[in-house]
Amino acid sequence: MTVTVRFAPSPTGRIHIGNARTALFNWLFAMNNKGRFIQRFDDTDIARSTQEFSDAILYDLHWLGIFPDATEYQSRRFEAYDAVVERLQAAGVLYPCYETPEELDLRRKVRRTRGLPPVYGREALTLSQQQIAEYRSDGRRPHWRFLLPNFTSDPLQPERTEVHWNDLVRGEETVDLASLSDPVLRREDGTYLYTLPSVVDDIDMGVSHVIRGDDHVTNTGVQIALFKALGAEPPVFGHHNLLTTASGEGLSKRSGALSIESLREDGIEPMAVASLAVLVGTSENVAAMYDMPALAERFDPAATSKSAAKFDPDELFVLNRGLMHHMPFSEAQDRLMVLGISGDKAEPFWLAVRGNIDRLSDAVGWWRILADGPQPAPEFSDEDRDFLQQAFDLLPEEPWTGTVWKDWTARIREASGRKGKALFMPLRLALTGLASGPELADLLPLLGREGTLARRP
Image (cartoon, rainbow, N blue to C red):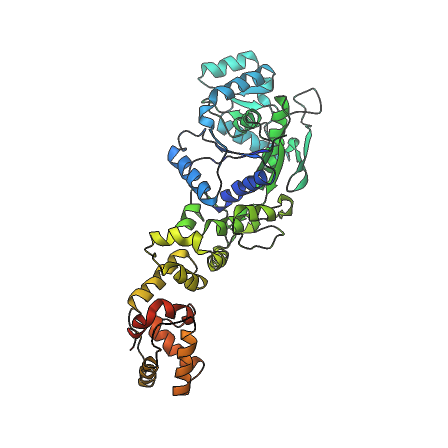
């Protein structure tokens, strides 16, 4: 069996880190099983779904390193759904209901007062032909419910079957259909809710594994029943825990919370996002992986916790910093060039500053310091100013070797008697204007003797 997975968001907004977690779980599972990844847009909500959001989601996925084998749109498959509706109607497991929302709400309240679960009582199955004719003459159009399977042959009996499956993430799972209403598959206006198009697509597209958030566990019980009603073998299901904000709030495409777009604009590396999105809330240690194959080796769906995981953006910067500190120049070169950092000094410059930046764009600040000097120029006490005048007088002549910093500071130490912070801090401030940063031994050759003397206070 070829492993085939799908990521199926509604294109009604930009995806956030929680959506990316689902996409990455599917992508890595496909990688580890040499399978296929289908990008499917559940865009049956024509009013809210847009091609602009679909394109933006694809862009975000590509940025993360996810490249679908196929892209599908539910809005182009209504004929397939209509055909399945006819099959289910003919089989007697999709039945029309004429209740208004107000009538349904009243019935739920009545059931609650009687101590019964507020599920649909299947009253539509007892309607006479005369009652149906009266509803139609009043202009009512039916919505259509899927008849969940029963233990007995009598559809009016409340006892229903339990659905069991071995969840890829959570292990043995059970959904008791007795606690659920027969789900509406088609609205009065003929549009579809989530369940039927999802199942039909999974069948037609040969989806073997459905990996998604654990807010879909109950849906899975209903969908398995629908797979069987259509004579299809259900896929293997896996439900991972959800991500929340650091304060425990849920994520939403509409709010834009922790959207992939905003993280990218903040200068976060895609592998920092991917690493934290996948590894947080699992038994694996959270660390920045340098590429997808490395992350795939760490990925194990069964290692995922059953409780929600908090996503702290501060952790992203820790991971991002780690990626910066070890990024080879070959990987950074083109991006540095776009930022105006190029030429013979670009590589030694990158190797000098990468250990002191959180984002790649932070390198621009150090490039400007080396080119233009500290802005504004630092202020010194009279004592430190006299010390620096003496220090710059001792600057070695060119050509410089890799030991120029060591040679220079040795001369200064011998002439001034200063050592430690009293020696190094005034020099650092004079050369960079900052109290911390890259090793001065690495920066000095980049400045050259002329550039260094230009920083004499």
